[in-house]
Length: 210
Picture 1: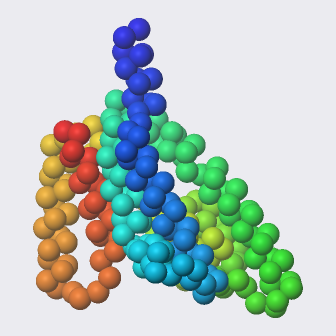
Picture 2 (picture 1 turned 90 degrees about the vertical axis):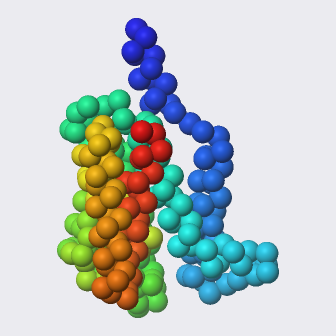
């Protein structure tokens, strides 16, 4: 009975301060996309941090996710159960938004003769979106609901993260490897290390629980 209560407590784990941070980050991302898509910047002096800070807000989401997922799912020993729970969390909303955006894209192109922002709205990219693979290197570009790229990245990171979630030593080793790899890449290349930094941030924050 006690164990059951502990599991329920973990499943409903919340930290109000972190919820507030997530809310601010979500608002920041929404304001950025409004600014980006509609080329509008009302109250620019006040909202400038939101217009320019989208990468920071996305990184914040990934870092918070690393901590919160460790807290919520660390009691689950089965990799299969972890995947089922995460699929139930991510995929239904992804499918709903994909269908809505697909319909919106269809009618927009019907009216204006051109896609809205994203052009790779074909069957191939639709299937990538169905399986949350639209930002894995298999894509030709952004498609349908472009901002859902972060959900695709999160899903792939989840698959890796859940391998280490119950194994603190492995988590530490993995984090050290990622640190070393990132330093090597920084020295070897001057380019976009976005995915690497997100992967590292997502894994490393799990150490806060250990």
